[in-house]
Image (cartoon, rainbow, N blue to C red; front, top):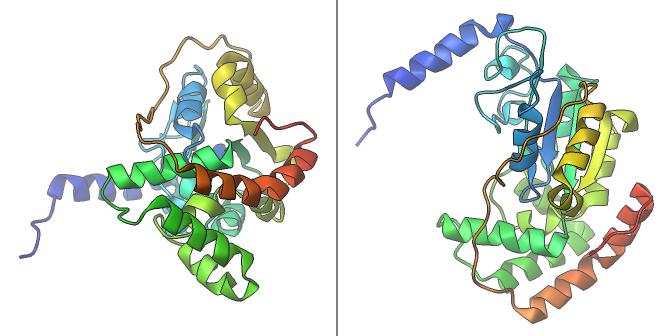
Length: 267
């Protein structure tokens, strides 16, 4: 049975597209990584009086409409004396996202958040289990991902998987922070990219958010206390054996990331 059209939703889409020429393009994007606190960071940025939110934190326009400057504006406010942006974390590992964004926004400010990749993978997995999308066990999907990522012949499969918001590579590939960062730096100047650790952000939200404000050339402003967005409440514990395997897998990548960032990591 066909679903009846939602006329209100379709009207809003049409209105946003018609009014797109009068809307702002994003000044900043948080491309990820997923489950690293991007929603909380977006709330902190949007709390600044000189920032306006998009109507969606994650419109993913640069995946769905990669060559359309008009559709890239659909979810943003009408132009004015403020900054606006989005936080579509599906951009982080998508093979085409950096090129798509650069084609329309070559000097956009990018903000990346990185978290202990083992805990990030587990949190990501638990989210999809809770939503009913994931039915396989974590050790099975994690070991499959590590195998594919270590196999040069599997690169086409990996690339194909990473074009989807949910796929077998997601849990592990999103934690290869240095490799993903290099893809973005193929298109964007390092000075336009801010790389942060989630652990620093949650331990010192005001100090880290002030660093983000400076990156966005926003005036100083005292951030009020804000709740953590999308706090996961997962009671199940990760199997120690697969946890140890993932730590070993990520260890050389984390070492390179520490050298790239010029700082020690707590992972």
